[in-house]
Image 1 (cartoon, rainbow, N blue to C red):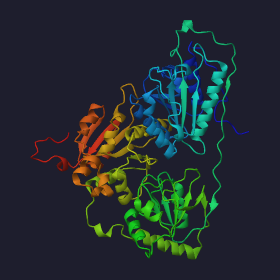
Image 2 (cartoon, rainbow, N blue to C red; image 1 turned 45 degrees about the vertical axis):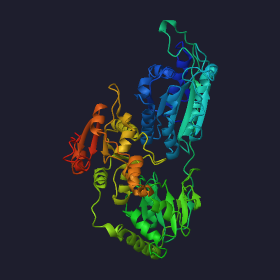
Image 3 (cartoon, helix red, strand yellow; image 1 turned 90 degrees about the horizontal axis):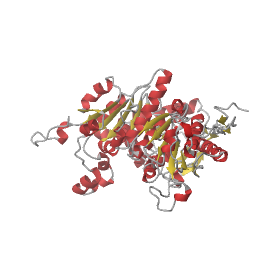
Image 4 (tube, rainbow, N blue to C red; image 1 turned 45 degrees about the horizontal axis):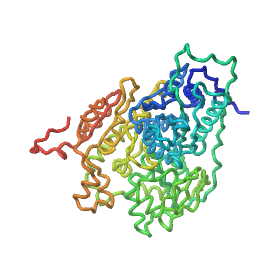
Length: 575
């Protein structure tokens, strides 16, 4: 029998006079025993039993609690904590009613990006549902197809949870953690019914504990091993496409097979001897010519490609390209619907000496091709230069979180290899909660660094609209542990990304108002008002600012001053 990674039983809680609190103590002990280390809570009344329980016994030492007043920020903070340390998924906790709706975007992102997340929503007991009781809605199935497991747990007995209720809770929580962290990781949802009293009674009024109550059996699921690799013939003209989250396996495959590597910034594979920098523009030219000498006949895809139309449409959608997807999960990426083969893992024999020489020559031709010959002399936009400054500052121990904006596409086209870890919410490529995710990553990173004695820097690179969309991610109360995080905002007063899409052909007034959406907001003043250290600087000043020592939450706003404020406008520049 394999050794179990934690305790085999959960102790029966000492009675608190509230069945809701008894159950909550048991739930937290179960989650802690199964690897949960962080809880992000938003304030509320119906969820109060879970908050009171966090302060019972040794639970404050087992679970670190973080409080966020905005449920969406809470959910994305938990997502960031889980993304940084998926073996120890974070839990997010809300009260009932509309609060539960604000978790949906984070749950969707966790589902599509396969990040484990424990979602706990408090609810009314069965007798109050469907009666018009305050803050009561149909929330048990709210996240539906986006969860790996969902359960609607009935409210415990009012004065004290019964043995059956506690056993059901422990068993269900164990199944939830196993589902969240298993072979197809993702979010799980426990909807927890609670009836009054929602707080423990005074110690003198509490029932006496049962003598020598046996512990509640805790189920540990041993995960399945890695999938067996499948042998796949490699075409000499093949390329390896590394989408978001592909990991080092993509680089290792490309290098072993001497194949060009087309790696997105957040692939985890953007380095090594096979990397082709500037591949989007180059690939667009290659795929536009059926007779081009570099035209691939096979594409081997790892991770989730989301960024480049030359990759997703021209390459993976081409009728003469054999697409092989490497993914052990059932929701594999095949946006062009042309994958001939999906394998859980891949193996291929190393090329012989003659074939290896041909492939090296082919790879060298990819890497020697000028990605943008027509515009080689044109200077990069200042926004791209700012993004590259942040990219180049990312060292081996650092984490860079990228927002979904034109900046990540600038990096895809212009950035070279990176030594550190690059993360992005590319599951749905939304701008929701990006600052909160980065804050969660930073909190988990600093906690791990405190245990290991070292940690790198965590930085977030976003556009101004993405920053504005998650201003509440900067709201961290004075009693909360603050993340050590640099938020770098490239502020060009609107959504530049739409200028590169088909919407650029819209009438200028329509494009500006409805797509690029200029905001005119003083981002430094907004960030400072929310408690962050904020500074506006020119793009050329970014490298020095990023190299300077910093602690806590810092917002650096890169801005071409003359581009927004003309000398004769009468407006003052941002501070």
